[in-house]
Image (cartoon, rainbow, N blue to C red; front, side, top):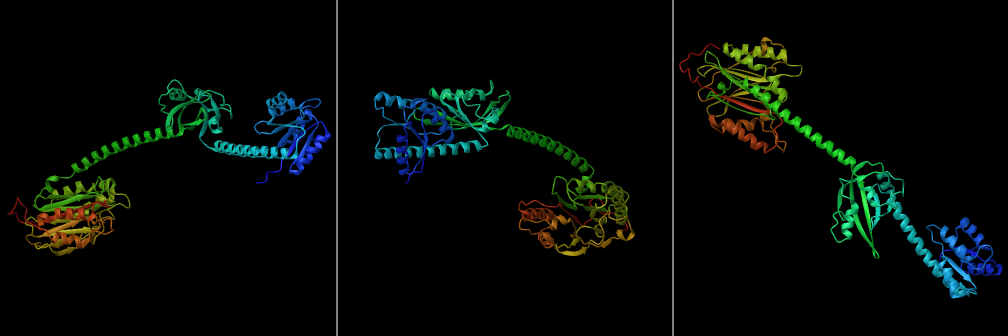
Length: 524
């Protein structure tokens, strides 16, 4: 490999010697610059920073010994090889020249072959030194660019170096930390001192910080204590140990964690309070339903809310004349808002039933109160049935929810009552909106009311439950088991998937009033 061309400063007060060295250097492909004494050599060195210096010893104004010492003091971190070339050949002179800072010593006269060999050797050393310096500079540049703080510490706890991030983290100017004891970075008295870990390690103990990442408290130059994440590794260099500490200010992370913890606690408190309020609301709403009427042996029902509250409402009541009134209502949406929307119908329903009002009159009153109380866009779909005391005559009204069906004794649909009215509360009460359908059920038959959440229940395969499946379940089971069979079929269909709407069904046996078997059926 060809050595790179060098700029060589030749320092000699004899012109013949300077010319000879210039010729030697030219033959080797190097460039020569000249100085006639030590003073001139110092000036040339500062001006041109040559790659190498050939130094004579005996010169006026400043000899080579002094010039070598001064150049060595001024060279900084860049090594400049200095070769003394002198006629002085005593051991004392050679030792003095090397002690002054020279890298080699040649006795004049010098043969070209020896000179060329020396130049090659010095050139190889200089190339190695430059590569090493470039590597160190690259590593230093990387260290300076890292956002984490990096410090190096010797085995006595003295900081050897600190990158800009470390200095900024602790509030020191660049390189100001170098030479300080590492204890200046540790907060006291709460935090464990990093140097204590090192002291224990050096004395044969176990250093808990070495090879791990720990959270400690650091202290800035202004005395501010802050949380610090520290990792320390050990390097063995010859017979000395060097510790590299990588540090990160985790103040923001600690603050964010504390904020998240507080937010989580606040949300939990809100959730708990919300749950308590919802439970209270549920109990209040449930108390408005007369559950005694729902225990009528002719009534079978299920209400499966999509959320804590159901927007579906199932109520029944018997009038003084022995007629059984039943209503399945489905308010817009689901949850608490839907449950609140349907609540106004309860007092009206019970009041009208107690008056033995006709089904048409009941529908009219329900529509009036909902139209007055609900905001625009809110309404209540409903199906209402009035079964005569003997169970052989019924009236049906359906608006805004699926049709009502009359099942024969064999479980098949014998009659359908379409949903041909607007939901309750949409418009003001009109006569045509209160027209009811008539039915003449036979013993063993059932009236079936259900919300659209039943037939629209969708599983993970996007398959709806559907009307056909509903009617198959009803037909395949005895009247007393149909509601339970329907509940099981819906659960199996959803297979753990969440229902998107409330699911309710109400089945009424078309049988006489159990307590008034001989009661004459009022005119409907």
